Length: 414
Image (cartoon, rainbow, N blue to C red; front, top):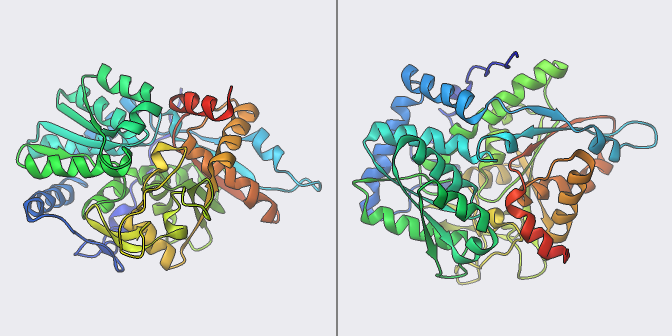
């Protein structure tokens, strides 16, 4: 069996420009953290800059990506989904799925967790903490900690623990401590806050594997670069399949790591449209949504400036989404920058439309996507009729839907 080789990294040039030396993407990003954490963030940035191009680190990471994670993930032509959106004259979008759902643990989250744990080893940190919403980042962190024999504590909101019970069991099965968080609404924002409190208390011995392109610098840069393998492979696979670039990249956005992982390789390619899809919940005109870039405004949360859902007093508004991974009132600062610079487009999709899309992909392609991914799939209903000719769309299938079947079953009364 011939395995497609990983393409060479093209990130060294791109990362010299954004973020800047202060960790800012334009006015977004930065480090808004307690003084206690500043040395830890400085240390993390120094180790990241030292090791990201280190041959021994890269060799270990790439070997594990190949033999443990199963990379490269396929770029799959969704033939029946493409036919579903075909126009009467035979034209229509050609839809490809970047199959991150086929990674070990079932999502893109393992890319970042694995790379960060290799940094933590080199930093001499034996205790690992993480936050999780949908549970996939928690599972990925528990997985790599089991692989390297490290202590693992995962903070998770009680509401998310209930709707993601399968992932809670998976984490515990691998030896992780799942710490329930009942503060606030018991969702991802609250879990992140508790993880940061733990880190402040145990900063000397602990590394925080933050799961998205959010939080204080260097996390938005670091997580983006560790997820950029998605876009690097996509470029290589597009060249292999049709000798060119994709026309449109499409991905869901909560914190935004899967989208940024796909987008980053192509940000400088002006011919490629970048489209991110947020959670509209019960509708962006209601109070129950998580459409941060659609309805939010700039503010500071969890150590960085970005778009936030907030009231007139600057207090965070609790978000809502059927998807635990998108149920977050903030977004990564680089997404905020891409929105304001108009390099990327952001739209939103309701719970109802996401569930319909989950059923559609399941029945047309035999692939059950995560509810997060289903938001991006749902936007094809709006996007495809707008397109002329036969443009090639690459949609990041960021995770599989095993974890969501009970939530979907309850939603559909099945």
